[in-house]
Image 1 (cartoon, rainbow, N blue to C red):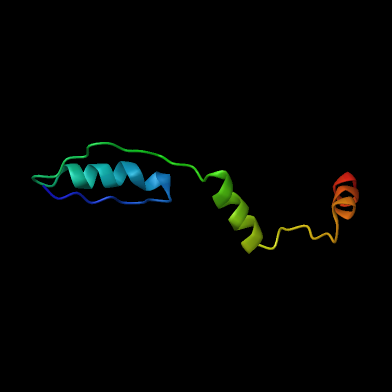
Image 2 (cartoon, helix red, strand yellow):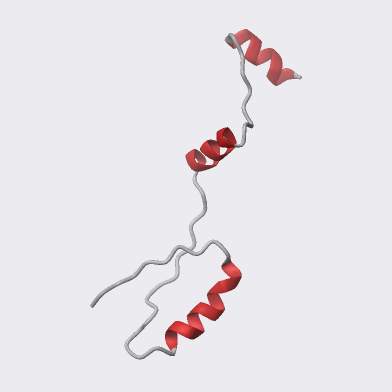
Length: 67
């Protein structure tokens, strides 16, 4: 038996994909799992988008966070 794991970002596609795949002979859908981004992934995305706060010291950072 060979398995293929698909990562699907648009959840609205799932019903159609399930219907298409279930109509194929010899293909079964074992399990559907939804994962959300973890804290690290969200943090990396924020850095990539430039959503960062720069500070020269801890005191400066604390002052910026109080604003």
